[in-house]
Structures are given as C-alpha cells and as structure tokens.
Image 1 (cartoon, rainbow, N blue to C red):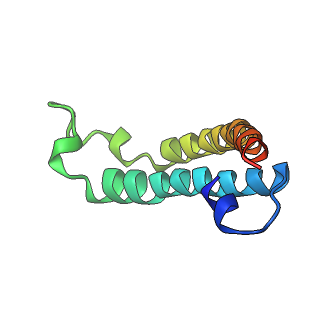
Image 2 (image 1 turned 45 degrees about the horizontal axis):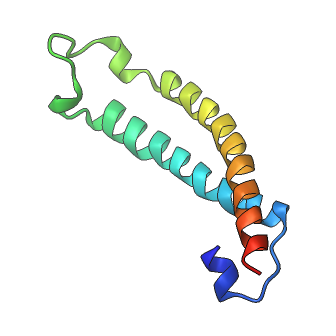
Length: 95
C-alpha cells in the first residue's frame, strides 16, 4: 500500500503476488541457509541443544531442514495469494 502511494505505477494482482511472494520466500530462504544450516547444523551453539541430546545425529540432518524449506515454499505461495488479495482490495479502496 505504501509503494502504491509513493509511485504512479498501477498494481494488479500478479504484481502484488510477485512482490509478496518474493518477500515471504526471502524469509524462508534466510531461515534455511542462515538459521537452520549455518547456525543449527554447522556452528551448533550449546544453547540450542536439549539437555542430554548433545551429539545426536539428528542435529546434523540437513535434509530434514530442506524438507521444511519445501513446505515453506508452499506456505509462501498460499500466503502470497492471501496477502496480495488483501493488498489489492486495500489499494483499490484507497483510490
């Protein structure tokens, strides 16, 4: 909505969908690469372990997090559909 107010560009559903999808997908990608793979699987700070589970093989399971990323892509698509529809209604109502 702020982008619409600051630019003369006309927004349709596809444009809004792409903008919202890129934003939500970027968070999903950040979660996979930085939070899951880098911090959780590679660096492994002590505070992330449940007591008594240090060194278990599951803490190095990159595929588990990748599957979660794939689920996140579906979530990104669905949420982008919903939020772009809401944004389109708001943009059209503020004309």
